Image: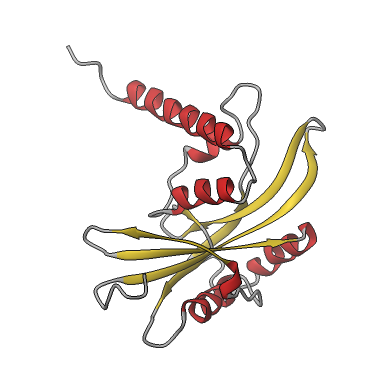
Length: 195
């Protein structure tokens, strides 16, 4: 990705997660807590942003951006997970890093994020991804996937959950199918039936 040349921009984002032994309503296992953020444009994404490769390595740039939104957390090359190319009017390489924290550390990140420089401006708040599906097969993760995500964030989330063994492939597929069906039904209600 680094050999693509000056026509490409690089964005670096971090998936922060922790094992979570808790249960929702005393019966639905939480398994993991994963942080995402609501952005200024109303889209969900991972903490991070664009890195100017003229001045920063990918990790230094990511840590600089994370410092604005999350405080003192520092990621390294060892936390690198994947890169995805997006072509179109904007040619971007989206780099994803992942770091497992303890639940206490994750909670500390959530607290410090509220006091960061960008809170309430570029970052409207952190959210935890509900990594469970309720009995109705829509509540929880399928509903979460029905939200609007920035660029490759939804794909990165699904990819990371799979490769980090946080959710079985069949559960990911079921949740995605349920979310897609929900969105399709919502569109059918909004659009008039063709004659």
